[in-house]
Image 1 (cartoon, helix red, strand yellow):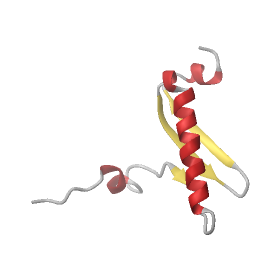
Image 2 (image 1 turned 120 degrees about the horizontal axis):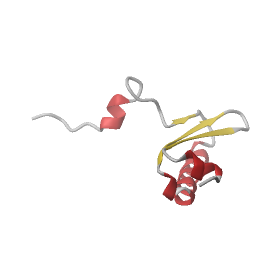
Image 3 (image 1 turned 180 degrees about the vertical axis):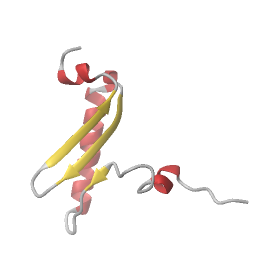
Image 4 (image 1 turned 30 degrees about the vertical axis):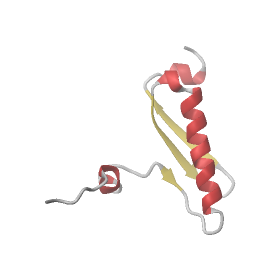
Length: 79
């Protein structure tokens, strides 16, 4: 019998890319909790705009959030 493998973990780096791109040595847990809170708040506030994916990228003191959605007008306030 075969082993069960997580399909997202199997495809990361080959077909798909990571949903969060950052590195931390000391405050890893804090930054991870911030990422989870950011994703949850975006999904709650934009639940009607068909959000497919939220990508987070951190630099020194900056966080870039990329939202992939089917209804961008609702995200920017035109819908």
